[in-house]
Image 1 (tube, rainbow, N blue to C red):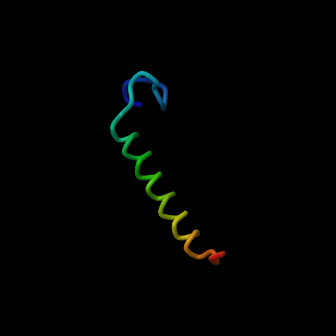
Image 2: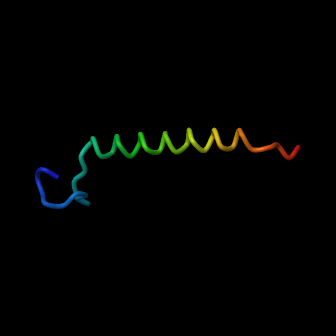
Length: 43
């Protein structure tokens, strides 16, 4: 964002943007695991 006026540049990505995406994915997976654990089992 410092080198261009655009927030997401297709040809050039910052490592912090990539790390933020990975952190968000880990958080989503953790939340989904907790929700799946609270569901009653069908077996």
